[in-house]
Amino acid sequence: MIKQKSKSIIIIGGGVSGLAAGIYAQMNGYDTKIFEMHSIPGGLSTAWKRKGYNFDGGMDWIVGIDPKMQEHSIWRELGALKGKNVAFYDDLFQIETSKGDICTFYADPAKLKSELFKFTDDDEDKKKIKHLCKSVKRFSKSPSFSYKKPENLYGPLDKLSIFIKFFPYMGILTKYNALMIKDYANSFNDHRLREIISYIFYNPDIEYSVFPPLFTLSNMYNKNAGYPEGGAYGLSKSLETRYKEFGGEIYYKKYVKNIIIEDDKAKGIVLEDGSELYADIIISSCDGRTTIYDLLGGKYLDENIKGMYENARVHPSMVKVFLGVDMDFNDEPHSKIYLRDEPIDILGTISKEQKSILIRHYCHTEPSYSPKGKSVLTSFFVANYDEWKELSKDRQAYKDEKDKIANIVIKQLETVYPNIREKIEVIDVSTPVTIERYTKNYKGSIMGWIATSEVDVWSKQVGINIPGLDNFYMIGQWVSYGGLIRVACCGRYAIQTQCSKDNKKFRTVLD
Ligand SMILES: Cc1cc2nc3c(=O)[nH]c(=O)nc-3n(C[C@H](O)[C@H](O)[C@H](O)COP(=O)(O)OP(=O)(O)OC[C@H]3O[C@@H](n4cnc5c(N)ncnc54)[C@H](O)[C@@H]3O)c2cc1C
Image 1 (cartoon, helix red, strand yellow):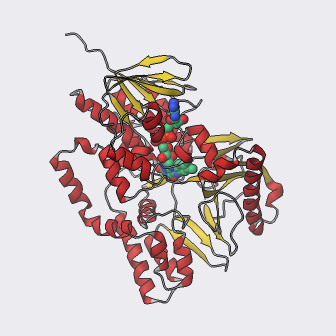
Image 2 (image 1 turned 120 degrees about the vertical axis):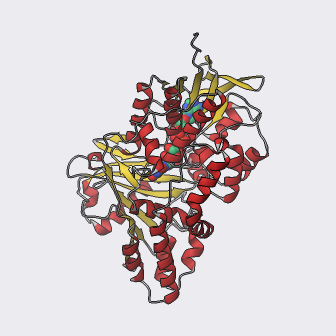
Image 3 (image 1 turned 120 degrees about the horizontal axis):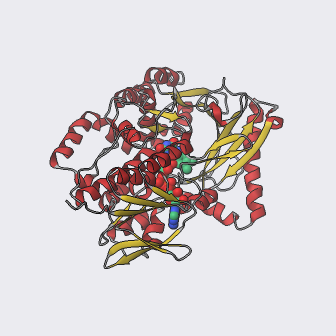
């Protein structure tokens, strides 16, 4: 019998989605090569070292830790968690108002209820709190959101089984998905609850519904969300190792500037030095707009793609302040938001009046990020890309603004730890422009699009295929929304679809 030659695949980008696609492709007998513009794997899922401190730039938690959940087997297929300890969170964060009220958003619904009850005697408020807490508890029993199959491969039974599995949770999903945090917070009668609840997912100015914090709390409660040892970069390195173990090749510092197309079939790529490389299938895992408008030259646009790229809102970027401090914060909450009466005078936040400062430390989650007895502290602000981009044209002004933000964070810390300034050994600030420079994501977006029902419709229509173009897939956070498990699944979907086209049974191997 003549053995058929394996098909070859070129993957553009070595972030989590690109690496996941590479792993599944290698598992299924394809010959793959990944071309990544940076010198390390991971894209947004990254970290960097400064003077003995490790600064995690891309993960707060991941879902899929609980071995009973479907997502867990995806992490196992990717070798993402092997041999790693996982730190769990008992709460989302603690918040302290300018009046000194302190509230912890506990993951345990019973504790959350008593914590929020502290602020109100009002029956209507209590009813809402009870419903929220009951929903967190109930949703903690819901099945995985990340399916092991793309929708294009669903049979009638798949849809039915998903419907049946989710039916008991539809009430919660529908109610809290449609309820925006701002409106929800404003519906409380107690003014302190109105303020506190508006921060339930960090920043009242990102237009989130109540569902994302509810989902996060329930996943923290059932220990399906946690922080694996090594964080964002550790996860990327594990995927890179797994990819190479299965025979994949990854090339760094290779910027892809074009996709070669003949007769509406993707044939290869052109690198920045002009060299051309050919493969049977091309997968782009890099920024969506770059893929559609630059690499494909804007030649493959339909109404859904146009709808999305012209109208959908991009998830905002972040300014992050990282501090390496010669102090131990083990006795402090892992994350705390301080609210102030006066807005903070900094440029480029999406809030018109930025009145909160978040401080997070890694002493519980990942003590190895700092030398013994020392700590990494971070603070982030949801940022306005355009203002930062404009400012970055003046290097000195850009640097001054970064210094100013770091100083604001340190001043806030001084109100609690008066001597902290002299204990700070490293200061580093990343902005939306930093994220854009290192990953090429549009406007430095950390999650692709903001989830809305319109984007849901467009992205369902668009999916991983580009209409009119064969031998090509587009994956990653601009297709699936951001989040590490989602982009990993997206890489899986491309290879499942290709296996189906090639009449091959899709195979996976657990670590
Ligand atoms: C601060 C922050 C916090 C986050 N927190 C969480 C969290 O707690 N939990 C969670 O699940 N998710 C979190 N995320 C989101 C998650 O990290 C991303 O959604 C995910 O990593 C995106 O992966 P991707 O593969 O789609 O894209 P990317 O990571 O952007 O990967 C694309 C890759 O393509 C490369 N590339 C781009 N253009 C080219 C080109 N022309 N040629 C070659 N290579 C190219 C880039 O360098 C990059 O490596 C966070 C992200 C950030 C930034």
